[in-house]
Length: 86
Image (cartoon, rainbow, N blue to C red; front, side, top):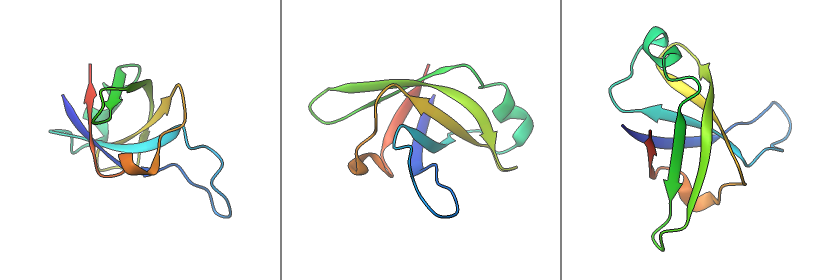
């Protein structure tokens, strides 16, 4: 499945975790369908082919967005780019 990295996970005053991101998955628009994705693997690859993988950890909101935890920190260039859910 295709997904789009929307933003980094933030808090009220600081942003510590660059390895956590909010992702919208294509075809998922409800919380119930997003809950089925928890535990699945997600991979983001840059133009050179270097890949950073992670897991879907939780649902974010009611409109189908999910929180992900990647192995390493993601670069700022990944925002708005496509990732793949396996």
